[in-house]
Length: 140
Image 1 (tube, rainbow, N blue to C red):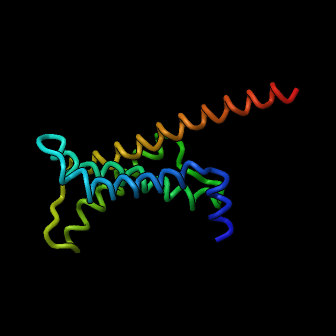
Image 2 (image 1 turned 90 degrees about the vertical axis):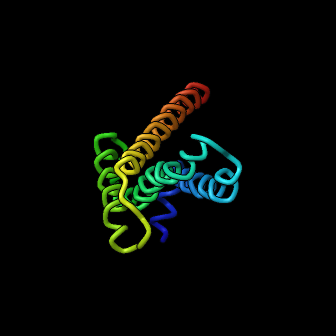
């Protein structure tokens, strides 16, 4: 448990993204789906949760991968990982849970969520590097 907490302290963006995805999921489930119409409602009902799940699964996995100094931060690792997770979720879950149907678009949403994670991670890394540079200059 200490190593997981250290991982979250070392790379806090993973924890922030996990919390943000949970909040977005709840917001979508209890508010947005009920108060939208048309294509926005369609996207929120059918694909939004799968997209943010792609972000969640990478952030969550990286919390534990970071414990062993391994993390998925390159797009070349994130995309195939999210594709495989999407395949499993979309095509194996219907074998276990009745009423669900496999959907290739949702597999793409998982990948899109992984790409979203990568973009947020890269943006935060650049901001952090700029801040560290600024701190180094001001301490001289």
